[in-house]
Length: 318
Image 1 (cartoon, rainbow, N blue to C red):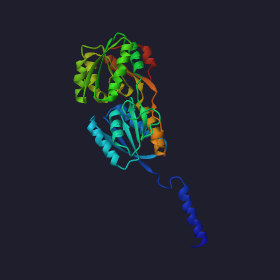
Image 2: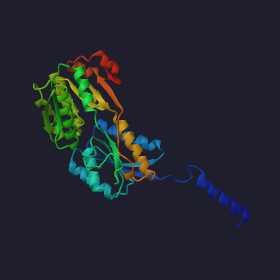
Image 3: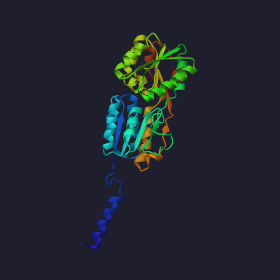
Image 4: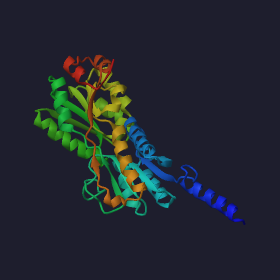
């Protein structure tokens, strides 16, 4: 090979190394496990993917839905443990618990978990020292109840439906009891175990409550149309804290933007995919709150929303 030809070949090799796009970028493989389908958790995953894409990372996602069944969540975790994945995104408390229990050989980033410490995912909201990090979606329940009480001061007895087998929901209900008590309100609770029981559970509240408040319970939110049907038919005001459910028939929700929850989790995943150990990435909280109001739902449930709250709202459905 002549000297000139060697120089040309060497120049081509160097160009291939330094020209952007000349070499194939790594495509990360991410397993996604979610407990059930509903708008908030879908928004969470969308936000997560947005953060990954904005960081310039290529990713392929393996989506798995436990369909509200903890046994399925464990099966999914076992699958991900054995699969060739770079990271697992666990959405909601039950699927996160299953993932953390089973998967020790891959990074886990959880999101939409109310109390990660109480759920046993991490020992502290600081760096875990393990393969786990993520984002909590702890709701401002006391602030929610205070706002709804101001919107509907005549309602003294509030009802709720939740899955007593969901640690996330049990914690939320505990906080709700405390908030109701603080404002001199009574909370009437109905427990269910699956989405098929949601309609009957909501019917149980008829004649016993002045209004209904739905927490972050994944089982109930996945069958929210059942609660809305009862609320509309019986003219019971319906409130929640998940803004993505307002359009479906709640009068109002003052809470989190779940796209932002997932986006924040995605930013932590980016750190891990770029080489930082997950145990050195502290868990975090989502603090961006907004008020959404559905005036059509208010009309259906025979409630007049004071204008000052309509003006406060970030989004209003009419």
